[in-house]
Image (cartoon, rainbow, N blue to C red; front, side):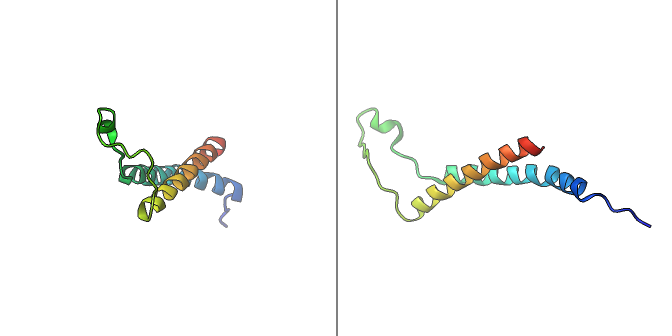
Length: 86
């Protein structure tokens, strides 16, 4: 007769395995989303270069912006959950 582990023990071990892996996955996606965003004028505007101060995000750039915000919220939530239950 095999004794099965308690459900709470099994879920604790699964959380200990899944949450850090999920944190690594989210952090990789978040870093990629940040790096893919288009850069502004940089230091060129500081030295008299053309400086478009206000620019509206459109299309893919706008979608990537919202994805970055969503990933950052997921990253923060997962970090809090991992700290609380880990």
